[in-house]
Every structure is written in structure tokens, then in C-alpha cells.
Image (cartoon, rainbow, N blue to C red; front, side, top):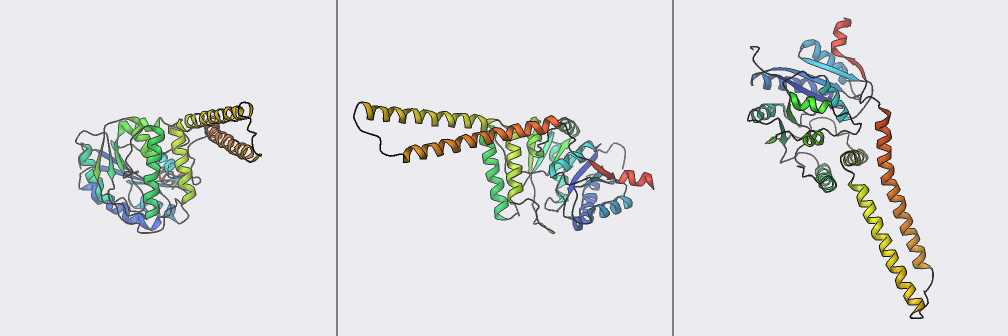
Length: 316
């Protein structure tokens, strides 16, 4: 290949799919060589519980275009993506999952769409091969997120995308602890396109996103992108206070002007518990934001690297 060919960097966070890596790299290689383009594959081991790092080092030893980053612990998928993007040098950067649900052959379609003048192109998974729970929780998350953020999102897109070097340079400047790759890219506002891609069933392993992790990810994404929950809690508190005032005025009129005594303490106790619950809820929302501010104020690194395949080669 001539030097005029573009360099495409492929960033792949790795967790729990060690058996897919050889096939993944082989299919990526065949696809990009047909474009044609130079390329590098960056595999980020996010403390995968299998032998992923050993496989990554073997792949890197057999092909210098394959590079590996071994994170010190599990920092999460979107932090692992950030680590990979920080190490890319490509003109175009592809982000994809390691489980082969994102098919490497679709990289060519993403790239050809980008050449039409787009700075970012996402893969549009109109027919998802995930289970019912994951499909519907993803759709619900985007509906809630759109309402709270005032934006319009597409629940059929995820991480699978290609971005220009300019876009990735902008992404690198965003160092918040709460990270969600596709939302960050969309927030930046670069010219974005989509292309329909085929979504495959998961070949090996199972998703690491259980209900608890999905709720945590959704909460972090919403809080990092919107302060509307705070405004809603203020508005809701105002409505409750207004309702309580009107109800109190009604009781006052009944007692002093209509000579009708207030019956029992049931309504009073229910109101106290109801308002107390609202107060604790509002404190909880406020606490979430304060907790995130505290995490950002500590200024800790987004990830820590134990080793890289480049360092391993130098030591040898």
C-alpha cells in the first residue's frame, strides 16, 4: 500500500470475550485491507476475567499492527474506550465491541459513508440480536434521557462508529469521570451520519451489564448530561407545598367558618410521611449531584495502565 492511504485505528474494549479476539482481528484485517487503508487495532483489556491479555500479547507478537493495553483494574467499558482513543494515531477511528455482535465487515460501510462528508458515522442496528430485556431497557433509557436532557437520541445506535481525527481530539478533551461514549460524541455536534448495519447474535459469553450496572450507567449518564432532575424536584416540591397550603386553608375555613371539626390524625400522619419521603427523595437527588462533583474534584485519572504490548516488546 502506498503512503497516500489513510490510517484507520480500530479501538476495541475487551471483557469476557477472549475466544473471539483471533477471529475479530482476522476479520478486521481482511475488511480494512479491501478498503484499502493502513490500520492499527488497539485491544484494551479491561481486567477481563479470562486469559484475554495473554491472547492479546500473542496477537500483537504475530502482527505489529495489533496493539494491546492492559488496564490495572476494571474501569468500565467507556473508560476502556477512552484509554484506546488516547493512544490512537489514525486519520479515522473505529470503536466497536469485542463480542462480534458488531461485525467487522461493516467497517467498510461506515468508512464509505464517512467519505460522503460526515465527521462521525454510527452503525444503525435496526434489528438487534440482544435479548428482550436489553433491547427494551436500552429504549427506555434513551426515552428518559431525551426527556431529561431535551435532546433527541436514537436508541438503535451504540458504540459502533467511525470518527475523524478531529472528533477524537475533541473527545480527548472531555475528561469527566462519568463517561458514555456515544452521548459524548453526539454532544459535540459534528456532522453525523448513520448507516444500517447487521447486528449479530453474541457468539461467546454473556453481557456483563446486569440490571444493577444498567441502572448505574443510566443514572451516571443522565446526571452527567443534565441538571433537569434538580429542577423537577424543585417544581415537584413547590406543587406539594402549594397543595398543602390550599388544603390547610380549606381546613381553616371548615373549622372557623363552617364549625366543622377536623376528624382524627390519619390525614395529618399520612401527609407527614408523604412530605418526609419527598424531602428524602430530593435530598437523594441533590446528594447524587454532590457526589459526582466530589468525584470530579478529586481529579483522579480516568484509567491506569498496568502494561502495553509495546512496552513488552521493548523489554524483550
